[in-house]
Image 1 (cartoon, rainbow, N blue to C red):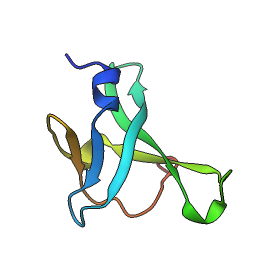
Image 2: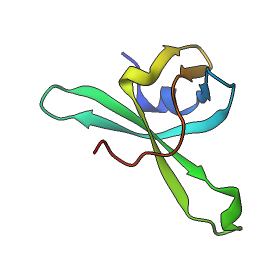
Image 3: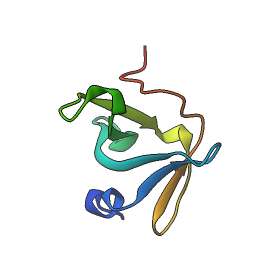
Length: 85
């Protein structure tokens, strides 16, 4: 079993283009099944200035390619998505 604190030290990287998304800040969990639905990453847009608003980027479980010793590789991440619509 892996703890959230162990996941938070791993950097999340998009495997398609090598973009660094940052680190996990939270998890979205299905309360009925007890499974992780998505990883939550807070990204800070460069155009917002010093006090820029951070966006919540959801990386859904199906997008995770692998969880390594120091990075989490994900695929098909194009822009911040708040929730599935």
